[in-house]
Image (cartoon, rainbow, N blue to C red; front, side):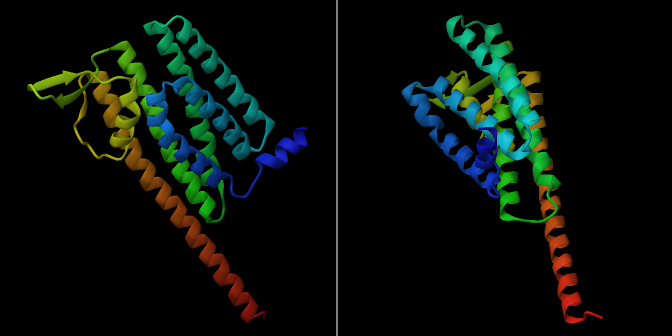
Length: 238
């Protein structure tokens, strides 16, 4: 059974599969909000990330660590559903944040440890970028739970100006807007803690792009040099 599971989760296009599944899940996010199925959405995402972590790590150790981090997160979310309080929400979100952080580390290490440039590496880097956006949305959720007035979203109604405080459904949107440094301004951090989290995410996003592009370019150059050396040896065996 374990060998069958190993064969199914070890593939040369494992990063491509992860990227596609993350894109699909993110696109389904607004649909799940409208249908009120966010807890099912979170469960599916957790299961997928466990499988992805093992697929990339290719060891039992990575699988068990991922499971040990995910199960408390799921349990705390069940507790939060039964007894929704500020502190149960903070604990549940913190557990999810730790789990996502581990997945990000495993995926990114796998991308950077590759010795040659492939399209799969590019897909892996994109997957990490998407995971960082999801991770930071959890950070904002924790900040908002600790300080309910940390974020505000401004909308104009037919009568005049209206201030509406941002909620959980807004944090994923705000996270990716901040990560990409778009800065629309429709949702704004209002407290020092929220402002710090926002600018740190912006810096992380820029550093990630710079480091990742440099690493992928280095892989591409190394591949080119190896192929050129092999071609030279073939043409001039002496």
